[in-house]
Length: 199
Image 1: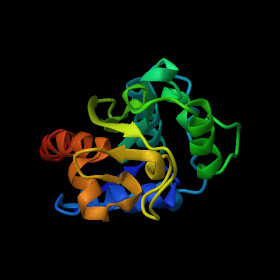
Image 2: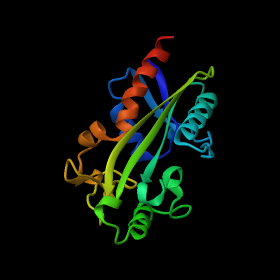
Image 3: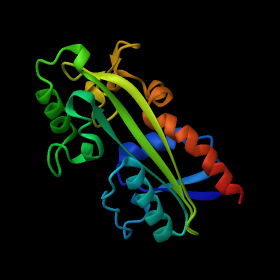
């Protein structure tokens, strides 16, 4: 069985990605299994560029096929911010709560029609030989007025899904994986991965 390295040390993200990849015949590892491999800084101008550079670096450093994602929240009323800066939106080392409370503060008093937003994810798969491919997924929603739910991570507690009447953080892991930006991108990435595993 082939190894697949997830180019992240975020334990919650590893758990989510591992569940999404459960039906792919690979042994899923992550950078947690390679303490000497440095994480690649996110210096790209898009989610796709960041995902691709992380996947390439992990594949090269570990000698295995690697998968990386870069994702974030785009709020229309904030001109698409936090976007690629979602992880650093409240400053370096800020907790998830600090990040989403900053978004709520910036949207204070905004009516529902001005609270439209989406999660966007880019997933890249790279081989040690240099082959790479990138796919994207999005999930449309609205910014809630207050955080709700204990599940997920990041901005999930303030991302409201009108058709479900709940925030992303109120969904079960299975429900989230079915509709999320990362789930959609991963399903597309699986096809790339299966093709790479055959070659």
